Length: 252
Ligand SMILES: NC(=O)c1ccc[n+]([C@@H]2O[C@H](COP(=O)([O-])OP(=O)(O)OC[C@H]3O[C@@H](n4cnc5c(N)ncnc54)[C@H](O)[C@@H]3O)[C@@H](O)[C@H]2O)c1
Image (cartoon, rainbow, N blue to C red):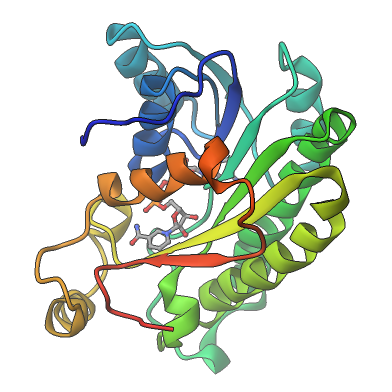
């Protein structure tokens, strides 16, 4: 992990989907920058692994079991936080094993399952977080979209629809919150190696390998620089933006 210069001391940062992958890397980076991390995940075992990994490094983290698609669980979780959050990283999403079918063959249940977590869950977390942040007139919301929404990846319609909607949601939330000095931005990673991409067909990995400007594979750690920057004082005049982090696969 590169050296981090952002100082988040004394700040609470909520990271959803912190159990593994990008969420665990982001939670680690925030904690290493001095933040107290509220790690949320619907999978208790993964959550425990993240918490013990961070605590073993002397980092400050608390675990919250929370399915972000369930309004009552999100509300209860934000009621339990020890203090108001400075930052919220809306990272949790269903990305594992979701692709493979053209849009007309996707089941209604699958479509709704993806939208419920990736889109509605992100909105719910933002809604309850904002209720705590708005009076302080400061804070940062960061939504994990995907470059697949910008590229228009085939056989992934529900997923890219959810991620494209997050880009639109980011813009709308940024305007709603501008008056309160709270910024809202999205990060659109490319195909990032991890448990969620192990089942992705080789041809998609090859597509990225052939068309990235940078030639090495993408790792979860590649998104932490932009994430901590967007949480920092240095980014206070950036809002409503989508930052693509994919080694130059999509250029927009
Ligand atoms: N890995 C990639 O290639 C890639 C590319 C672009 C965008 N993204 C996005 O980045 C985010 C993280 O991706 P990843 O590859 O690390 O995924 P992952 O599947 O490895 O991890 C996702 C985490 O979210 C948790 N989660 C799932 N549903 C949840 C829910 N309803 N409530 C709370 N937690 C839940 C899982 O338990 C898991 O710990 C996702 O939003 C994904 O869409 C990933």
